[in-house]
Length: 633
Image 1 (cartoon, rainbow, N blue to C red):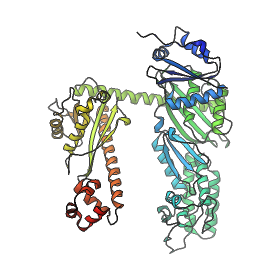
Image 2: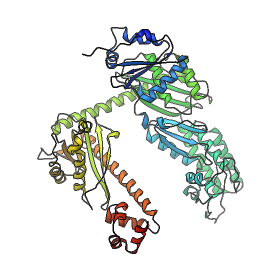
Image 3: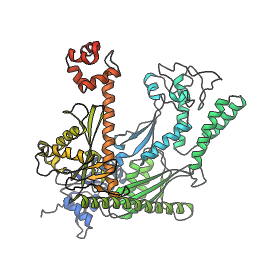
Image 4: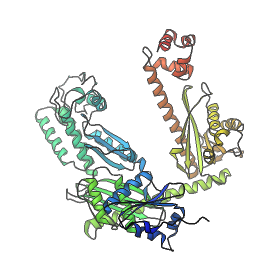
């Protein structure tokens, strides 16, 4: 056994800062901070009875570096930056934080775009750019955007307007317009305006749901006012907007502008429905709190957060944090706060209520207040409504943890049963393949990967089919699987290490036998088990079994295979659609060549690139006189 690394403690200063532990390959495996770096290092290497997980960490350490800071607050900030940069496996980290989504509103634009962005690590904080999130559920983002578009008179062509319009938010407009109200049309008047700057009026305008910036009937400044109302709405403030809508509705009714009054009433009704669904947590409209609950298990912690703004619950978040080491409750609280609020960009609370006080709360308050731009207090409620809400969040965390444990247990059970049914020792890695094309053109293949029963998206691959012309799904599948398993690729040890335990294709016994005849030509030591799942009866065909396996539609093992197959189908269609769109756009760049001609060329030659390489006579057989346009392009 190799001798364990031990740092020279005498060379480590009694100063605040951060320390980094490296393995023998030079990878950062843990980052920590300390008021006294030497004392913290001594706590690792001077104790004989370390917890099991800490001992395993120390067995992997081959080097220790440290960085000195002036204060502990600076050490906290540096630690957060280093963890984001290195993503050390032994630190408390948010699971799947790259998949979290944010609603972004850029107020620097003449007509602010409301869009969804993801991957916090790629987001740069900029002045006058607001972010709301993170949203841990894609459905929550979709629902929120639907509500915004239902309530507020937003333009669907703002991206195009920003491209062609160089005016600032305060620039004048040809028309005065009215904030938040679609310009009134008299009976018999049609929406046939030419738009602004060459941009056609959007569909929302034709439906009476747009403020009219694309039709030249309102200003950039007025549109900014509406967007600010959206920001207030996302921040839990809806009272001012509701009051404004009611005033405008009553004024329109008095003026006998009944169409306008009806639109305003619909907006007001939609807003009232949403506000009614926002549960009043505390009657004080100045209340701005994040109330935490958590449940800690051996490997992970489930954190639930109720976000209260203006006294109303505006969001409910659930996070799962990885716990690779033993950790004290006060250290966990501090690390959890850092992990979650490192992913927060806007709409900060004024108070954070926790079940347990974190280590160094004053330092954390300073760090959070600096990020938020206002004072944030951290406390543990002792009595009253705050205590009741805190206990409720603890209960919610326990329920969420139980549900996640139950789901994981169901997946493990499904894998175990499938192993028995298929006669294999393990099913750690399963791959599924599918083919997508449009009448024999744009033929592509997809490979999706499930590891331990869950999607492993970094392992997904896409294939352009090279050897098959026309419609032949099984020849295309055979090509794809051969390219995946060909021996020269498996000579790469990294590729061979990722050989699947099973491959799933769509189809019945005949389709499976066709693929097996092709894959049997592949000369490798261990060919993965290849099975098929027939859609009509959902029967599983296995090469070693004469009869198909029939399972209940509600069985977890069948549902796992269905998810794998359907994911391959989705991934193939997405790629095929994107490829087709890209090629058709390429064809539209050739003067005189439209979509119909592009499709003919792609059907005949496989791609526009191949069509360009064809001879003039070959092209004339397909598109006649237009062939010269291709050769001259």
